[in-house]
Image (spheres, rainbow, N blue to C red):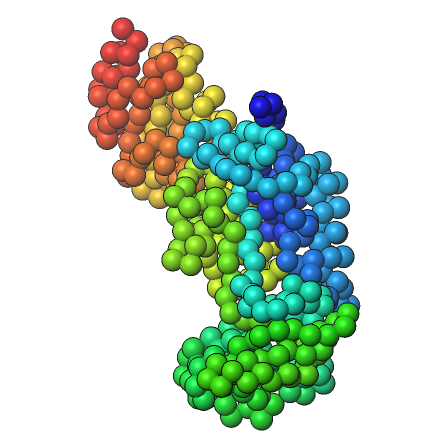
Length: 412
């Protein structure tokens, strides 16, 4: 078997949707060597949306494909590279992250997981023929305006299905809802249920599920099957909206990243996954709203976070944990008067060794990630002593005699 080719990058981004492209723009602009890996169409699910009318800066609606092409062009302008392939496995354990595809092994200092997801589908007959731009949609916010004064169907009765269905009534003349339960029973919250049942534009087909989708080039009918009688009911619609769940593309990250019960990646507000140097952004992560605009925000934060992580890693290795001299690292709290006042005293002590001591100062709050690398959560003051790039001692006794005793021992 032919050996896989190895390539090195500063940042590898898994997924080329809105989040991944935005992260790529930020990383490329920071002059980081960046690669975006996308197994399908660059732009992700947004490319299947006929009209995007709620993305800031574009007064006129434009096709999702056009908007995503603008994202891609901007990323390419900053030197971002693209690879159209599927990621087979990842290894995030070491300082060098490994992303493996069928033919390549990519090594990166940081990785951004922006793998997105896919809507859960009914698997009814002919469904794949009408997915996305042929009559089946998964986003009412995206396609509601295009269905003004038309008849649409909503499949599902959870919170998302019913709330999106009510939103569609602002545009469509009729919204037909297919529900698998008995009359009056839904999976949504009680307030949404009552509002939907009292909405004159909403019609319900109880005890039904989609049996097949029919039409020439575009969807014309959804054939519903009654779960109790087996009767088939062809319903003429212009568009069918499916809201029966969403599946994040996280299979290869199980037992590697922390996932929610629904298999979304769990991050903090800085898009950090809990593994240093690994971030997640966009629809793949656990969050409330999944839209192009929120994906862009996620991607921007992850891109900036990656840049900061790489810069801090370099500074930590080359400056803070340097091997040339005995090191004194003072971690202090700038808002704590005693620790702040001790800073010039320690600097004077270090200078008294005529260049034999390398002193670094870290503000506990501004340099929190650096403190995390030192496993330091003690405040208001802690001193780390290093030799040959390794921590030799840690002490909260920052008095001049104690500091001199430690330094003299390391220099002996």
